[in-house]
Picture 1: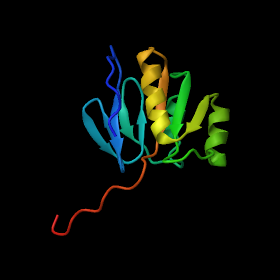
Picture 2: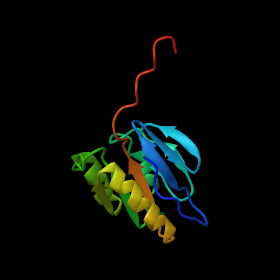
Picture 3: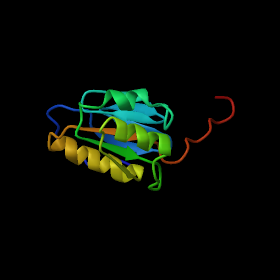
Picture 4: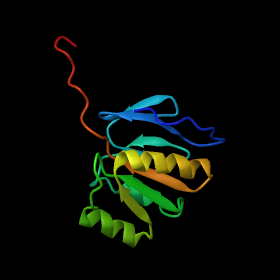
Amino acid sequence: MKLNTQNFENGMQVEGYGPGFFRVTGHIHHGPMIISPTSAMPWGGWDDLDPIVALAGQVDVLLVGTGADVAPFPPAFRALLTKHDLWADPMATPAALRTYNVLLAEARRVALAVLPVGQPNPPESGD
């Protein structure tokens, strides 16, 4: 799915997504991601806590895309957020992507930890 194009002075815009991937500022990334105004990097998911801790004090809000549907945070993830005073909002990935772009366009201090929707298609035989 392609998201609406906006003009961003600075920042890593999410331009689209599909099964297992995200397009961020013209580059395709596969799998879970952490995206901030200054970087887009792979994320190991719920058990990969170090990149989340690194956001403490750098962002005002962390949007968390939980996949195709909204889902509660695992207990260890929730505890980490509380310990580091990170405000996070779980939402379905499509909503998180759109909200991130809106907040980024408003020059807000926002980051996104996001799980992809769906799974990528398996390679065709012979690939």
